[in-house]
Structure formats: structure tokens, C-alpha cells
Length: 80
Image 1 (cartoon, rainbow, N blue to C red):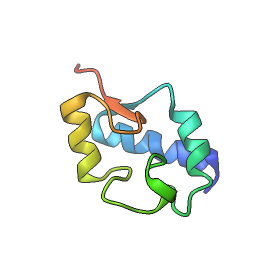
Image 2: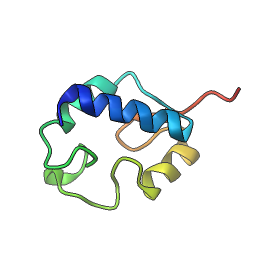
Image 3: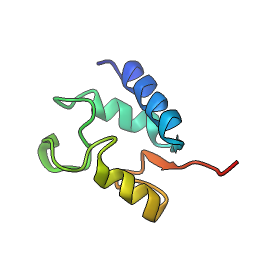
Image 4: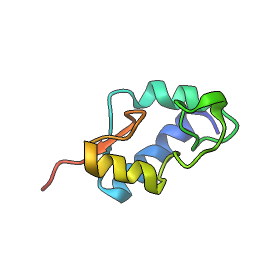
């Protein structure tokens, strides 16, 4: 996937889950473009899939508990 496609996918996920993308989203999407799979957390060692990845249970829990995920890509959306 290209950086733009990744960013669009991340935006759709954020909207669906009621999250927002952080100010780091473009930078993270650019890094994700270099990984074997777009959903891998760029913070993980060697870019290998682990239990922490975009839309994982672990990251959703981090967002709910801490207001943002480990890599600071997704953050809690504003309550309306």
C-alpha cells in the first residue's frame, strides 16, 4: 500500500471506532509504507507482527485506558 492509501485506511478505521488520528499520522503512515504489512506497529522491533498492531485488542485497550495507543497514532475521539 502507498502512504496515501495507508493514511486513508487509518482515517476510515478511526472514524469507524470513534477515534481520531494524531498529529503524527502522516509520519507514521510514511513509516508503515516500509513495513511488510501496513498494520504492523512501527514501534515494534524489526517491524514484525506482534500482538500490538493497528486495530488490535491490545491497542484498543491502550486507547481506552491511556487516551492514545502505544505509537500515538490513534487517540480517543471527543465525546459529542
